[in-house]
Structures are given as structure tokens and as C-alpha cells.
Image (tube, helix red, strand yellow):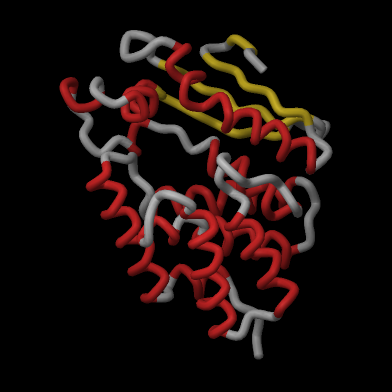
Length: 223
């Protein structure tokens, strides 16, 4: 059987249904966008990082698959969504015929991507963590109007981010998350209030890949 590809996963109706259902559920709960935009950006960012680090093509492909599927557990419940998502992914990918060692890599990455209980256990997991936690952007806010985004700190912080980038330096020793934050929308401290644990997780994921992690906000290096 041919290896499972990222394109086949992106075109899988069942998987896309689960992503949609999870995103819809989080919308009811007041969370930012966790749909196809986030899934695709996470997949492509994780893959790009591993590609730059010289990972073999199949590992890069597995990072794309894990990145695209990492939030399907949200359709069950936001609580422990990484673990429930990993269980779902196992059933789906096993049914599709993914080879056991690849299945283990993808499932462990999905199961370890959340900051409440996750940790980088392989290179795909590390790349997924960095890609997922760096996706902070205005377009993730569902209700971009003054009354709505000011009520919720997650909306406020995402809405304040005018530009974000995750880049590996030329020497391939440090990965930097660079943010341009509109401080008229929220102070930088609001970012740390909700994202500090995620940034610590990113630092540990970078360390797993043999990299330093830097956070630069409005041209000031903070980590």
C-alpha cells in the first residue's frame, strides 16, 4: 500500500468534517478560529521548519499530517482535546493503512501538542508545538469589533497582532517568533498572561531540535 500523503489527508471528507465540527464547537465556547486556516498554517509551518533542518522527506510529510489533524479532538471536548484527538487520529490513520511506526509518530505528536500535558517526544512533535503555538494573528478572531474582542483576552491578544513570523536563522541555531503587536489594542503584558506557558513549551520544543528559542515583540527581544 502506498504511504498516506498530506494531500490525501487534506482531501479526506471525514477528517474535514471533524475539523469543521471542532471549530464550530469552539466558536460556541468563544474560542478563536481552529478551522482549516489554523490546520493548514500549522501543517505547513511545522513541515517548513523540519525541511530547513534537513529532515528526510517522509518526516516532513508526517509533520504536515500531524499539523493538519492536531485539533480534531475539539469536536469531542476542548478539555484534553490533544489526547482525544490522538485517539481519533489513530483510528482514522490505522483504517487508512498507515504503517505502524509512522502512525506512532503522528499520534504522539497530536497527543503532546497541548501545553497542559504535552512535551516534545520526537522531532515531529517539536515542530508541531512550535507551529501551533506561534499561530497568533488578527484573522483568528471571530468577532473583530470593539465590543467583542475587548471582552476576551484571547481575542484581544490575537486581534492586536498585526504581523507574526517564525523564522530559523541562517546558522540554524535559533528559531525566533517575531510579533508586531498594536499596543493600543492590548499591552504586551496581556500576551504573557495567556501565552507564557506556551512560550516555555516552545523553548523546550526548540531545545529538543537542538535550537535556541527567541521571542521578539515590537523589535524588543523578551526571551
